[in-house]
Length: 376
Ligand code: ATP
Image (cartoon, rainbow, N blue to C red):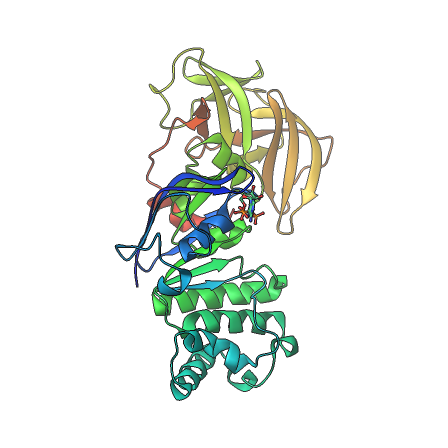
């Protein structure tokens, strides 16, 4: 088991694409670490470069304190699971799982014993003689995991291993994978497109953009205190409301008529007239079915759309300052065309200036309890 240290990591593909750009990252020993970011930001390239399947153009990869930058994949002690599982179709489940040990030239008896042990821990006992084509998506995923585990690597690299599963299986596999990782304590780097998955599973995560790491933190930290407008707009299943305005005295004025108290932690950090962006998640606005004191401390306007989210609704309010999305609990939702107000929770509001967060550095650990109720 081992931590991963990346320094100045750059990867240029032929044709001039810079997929990784002087990237630095530390993943702690035994950590479950998620990589998130828009398509093409370099997540897969990063995993492949850690695994040694791509050579770094510049920079270094250390695993467990040892410099592995120039070592071939087979000597890095890394197990990788790909999105499509990359199982050998002509081999049985047992032979697929034992494959890494065959590469390591272990004896037949040892290979089969190890494969059977791993298969059993993943609930695959009855399937050892089948071929991948005779398995469900969830079973194939487990075989791919078993194959990565069989060689007992120090590091697991998982590239969207759950994306081929349907919603129900995915949830099951997520719980399973998380438990397995806990039990094995193997340092794991996990690429996903699914934010809810990253927020639910990861000990810490990195948000990437254009080959660089933009923020590293616990899911609670990144969700509550996005370091930049980019991270704020990327994280969250219902996007954060981000409205431009100016500082006037103790207030942020958005679109001339919406006057909101400055969010907690921003007084003294912004100056009169500063151009800012006011950020508040739809979950942290209280909807009021009246228009008293329009615009003072609230967004006020007409309800344009009400969308059913199941146990709540997403209300779009046409306020001075822009469209504002509000999550409203069951039974309290207005009708389209109604007028109403949305009041931000000052302790949850954020202020950005020049693209960066003004009220950063809050104590996000105290907030992690609430995360379970409101996954992004
Ligand atoms: P996605 O979420 O869509 O899988 P990603 O974040 O994993 O994307 P990468 O696959 O790492 O991104 O790609 C990063 C950049 O490198 C992209 O611009 C991509 O087009 C480019 N790229 C990836 N592989 C190669 C390659 N073999 N040759 C040339 N360019 C490549």
